[in-house]
Amino acid sequence: MLSIASCLVQEYEVFIFWDKSKEDKIKQTALKKLGIDLSSVKFYSNIFDKKTSLLSRFVQSRKFDAIVYLSDGSIPIVGSKLFIHFQFPIEWINGNSMKTRIKLFFVKKIFCNSYFTKSFIDKKLDVKSDVLYPPVNLHVVKNMEKENIILHVGRFDVDFHESNYKKQDVMIDIFKKMIDAGLKNWKFKLVIGVRDGDEEKLNKLRTISEGYPIELIVNIPNQKLWEYYSKAKIYWHATGYGENLQKYPEKAEHFGISTVERRSSIFSGDRFCKELKKIINE
View 1 (cartoon, rainbow, N blue to C red):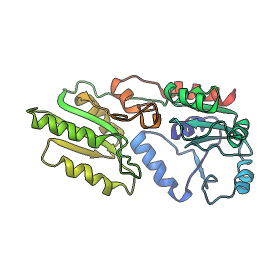
View 2 (spheres, rainbow, N blue to C red):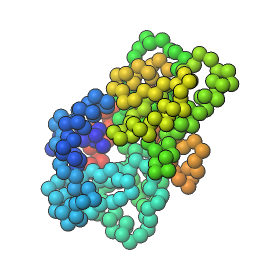
View 3 (cartoon, rainbow, N blue to C red):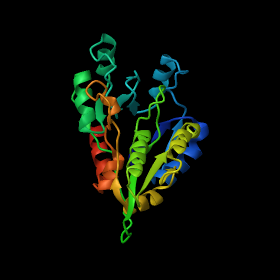
View 4 (cartoon, rainbow, N blue to C red):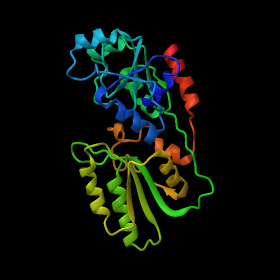
């Protein structure tokens, strides 16, 4: 969504619905960690906050020509053109309910982050969505010698059952078994993005890693991340491992931006902007 804002601000006045008190911090973090420049983007009090009444949301939304909404399964009713973006399947939603059908009637366009997500969204909501891949620009550090490093890159995310979505705990346990079985001269490095307040939960991974050649690297800037990509001989990703992905497809990797980065398959920012503007202007 930050990429969408940075793209559209080149031609339009763009606002992000967020906590205005965190504007400076969010802009600094986006630039440092993601290389996304939001300096020209403005922030607006979040009208989609649960504390905002439906009437107030509708009235305030009329100030904007269009709204791009990142959906968690919900579909808001607003007073402007509405574009819905899905990044994962929403199998728990009743797509045939009268309430959902009415809300969909007012949606201008739906677009997804992958054909995997699209296949479930289209079936669930009986729509024909577009696909807009996230932009991936990898600056590989050339002439860097490869090392015996197994690399994992992903955010740290646990549900209310303390289940690790990216399966970092599973990979650590498997790597420990490999070491115990005789694997030598290899290191497992996990580059992890951690939100404020989740550091304590991350300590579980630190604890189970003790005594093994395992390193947890937290919240590093992109340039440092590219160095790790360039040095590692093996990339390891385990999202969806052991899950019933037909019943719970949201537990799979919906796009897998880190796997694309590792393979150096690039969907450039320029192409992303062109495709986005095509969707918005249709």
